Image (cartoon, rainbow, N blue to C red):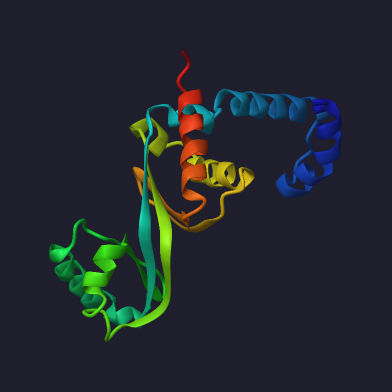
Length: 196
């Protein structure tokens, strides 16, 4: 980059904002120092941070959207949690702005469906797959890791129906036919992060 040209370009704005005369040389030095700080603060490459990640794939999943006023959320989540004692695994429950997402195995959904009859199911997607990516502590704090993962899957033709980003996990719901492909793409990326 030509720091001198940049300094000439911003000189009028700097003088207007500061109300003082700013020499080109002073601006060049300031730009150079700022540029040096940017090159020293590189964030880790997201593709390398998947090194210690673990991935699981489950098929036969149901993704349920329950519409309800926000003031009823706590009662509904409590009700769903109480019903979970009869299930094979605790469902993923995600309160959103105007709905609650419930992700659970199909056989568990069949068990609780009667108990949920009084709730307004806005949408139910049956026979989808669930991917859970458990991140390493290093990956958890890497800026852009979730964007990297979702973009990687998109580039490989995987349509993500839902994604929920937690501190240590990324939970994604994909069409059942995309599940194995998504798993393979992520597994290759994880293995590629582990140099032999």
